[in-house]
Image (tube, rainbow, N blue to C red; front, side):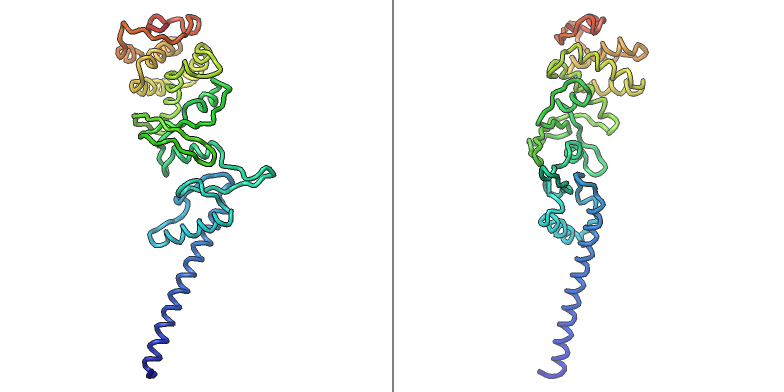
Length: 268
C-alpha cells in the first residue's frame, strides 16, 4: 500500500474514532443530565419524558439512559414512558401513592383529561368510610380496565367538555347522581353533606354547576334543584325546572326532614 493510501486509511480510522468518541461523550452527557434530573425528583412521584429535554436527536439516548436506571433499580417503570423513584422501607419497596397514580391517568402534560370519582371520591368527601381497591376515573373517551403497580383502574365516559376548575363541581354532580349507591351511609346523610358542600360555593360556581348538570340525568337535576332552592334562594333554578317532565316522579328515598321542598321537584 502506498504512503498516500496509508495516510487516507489512517485518516478514515481517525475520523471514525473521533465520531465514536463524540457520540459516547454526547451519550454520557445525556446520561449524566438524566441522572441529575432524576436525583431532584421526590421519591414516589411519577414522571415521564416531559421532565427531560427530549428532542429527535437525543430521544434514543434518553430512552437508553432511563432503561439503565430501571435495570439498576434507581427508578421503576410504571408503564410505557412513565416512571417513579422507589422508596425502600423495611417492608420493601413502596409503590407510588394513590394521588400520583390518579394524576398519571388524569393529566396529559398541562391538560386535565379526567378526574377521580366512585367510592374513592365519596371517601374523600366524608360520605363513606369505605375504601375501594378500584380507582374509578371519569374522562372523555372509553378505555379498558388497567392495572398500574397494584392499582386497578376503571374508566367511565363523561361526554362533557370541562376544565380543571369544573372538576369539584362534576364530582358533586356524580355524588348526586349515585346518591342511592353510596355505601355505609344513608341518602339523608348524604344530602346533609351535599347541602354543606354546596353552601361553600360562590354564586358563579353554582350557576356553572347548574350548567354542567344539564348533561346529567333528570333525577340528578331534580335533587340539585331541590337542594339549591332550600340552600341558595338567590340562585335562579328555573332553568333546571324547565328540563324536567312535570309528571315524572323521582324515587330517591330522601325524607321530608332532609329536603322540605321535595314535592316541588317530584322527589319521593
